[in-house]
Image (cartoon, rainbow, N blue to C red; front, side, top):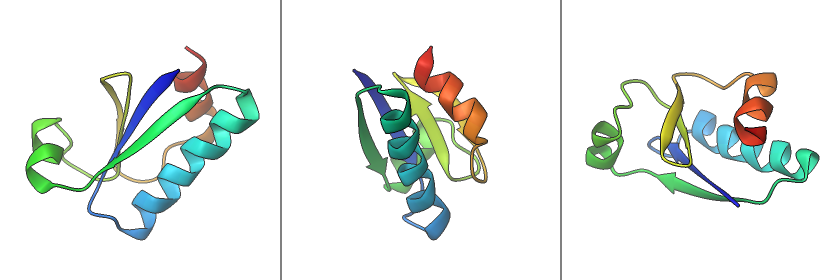
Length: 78
């Protein structure tokens, strides 16, 4: 099971990113837990300078704007 954290203040893009993660995981048959991190201090400590940010299994893989669906699938498959 993969752990995915979506960093952001809870904006529409952050919510969309979390849903994209869930949808991609379902499509790939990968089990994930998605955690939404909204605390500004926690976001900064993770190194996210632009939201939404995405970390997979503790590694920051994306920051700023919606992630590319193909890249998201690659992160979840790795």
